[in-house]
Length: 123
Image (cartoon, rainbow, N blue to C red; front, side):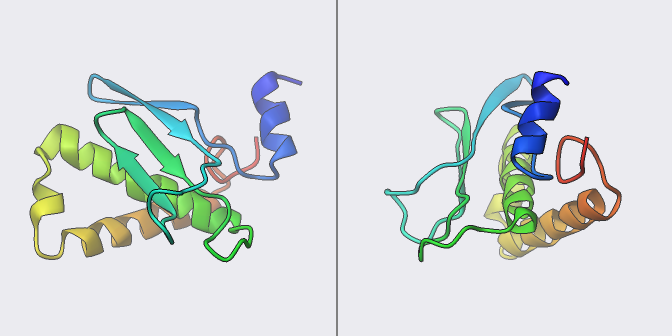
């Protein structure tokens, strides 16, 4: 068994890449992450640090389910894509955050229902 398959198996069906490349930028995925700087936060992208941080436990101390974690992953990746390819225009729009949420929900559903490996599916 490969190291990646073993990691995926140990974490159930959740397997997120450790690093994603968006444009010319390498962004580290930090999951699990415990937010001390933003109460109630489930995910955050730090463009300056080149990091996406994702919580696996909610502010009440409960484990977040795989679908919600994957949704957060896509949400933050979409913010990175917007920053790199659209110079943050989506983020600046009145309904930008709602659009990011809707796209993240669609990508999450696509990954979960089509059993894609790496993100949401089983390898």
